[in-house]
Length: 113
Length: 119
View 1 (cartoon, rainbow over the protein chains, first blue to last red):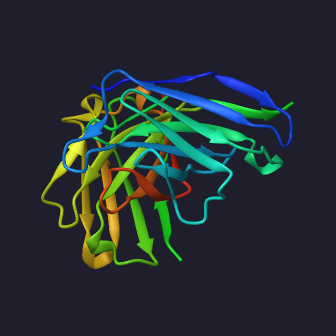
View 2 (spheres, rainbow over the protein chains, first blue to last red):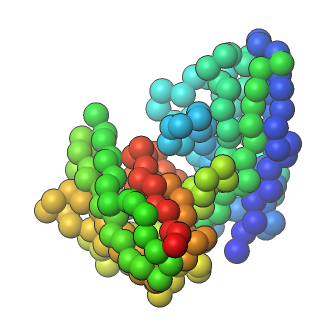
């Protein structure tokens, strides 16, 4: 199984500042057919289901603001919120979508400093 | 508008069974893979199972293999999860989710239904 490890567990960022969340996979998540890294990101606000933000490492899902961006390759990936807004307070999860079992990172909670 | 509405959760004793249902609307259900993802109270997300469009392929996390069965009724736009021999560690909110076309991620989620396994 591919183990996904996120860091930090939580972070506090001032409004308008950058937030960076890291995700590391225990093995490469390169999709053989597409030659793309199969890594996605979700946002989950308290009491709500997750929402898909990013897939194939860097493609924003429909309707996701462009302050959210994904990057990385191989085994190390990053979700960046370029200018934190109050509505971005949430938990964020990475997920590898290369192979079953599909696996998620443990989550990172983002708060306002 | 895509909507997924789960039902069937509740309190069940260890060793018991429960069947979750999810009714989909707002998209052509029969053309999408579907899945179940769970979240234990205060914990992270755990993928449970996926099923292909016509139901011919199914995949499970090891911890539920042999106990849970995913199925679907395309005529009824419905997804199901039959859960047998339930354990305390199966306690979680269970989400029904649509699989993004071309990638095994989940692009739309239901609100979830809580399953509590306790005596």
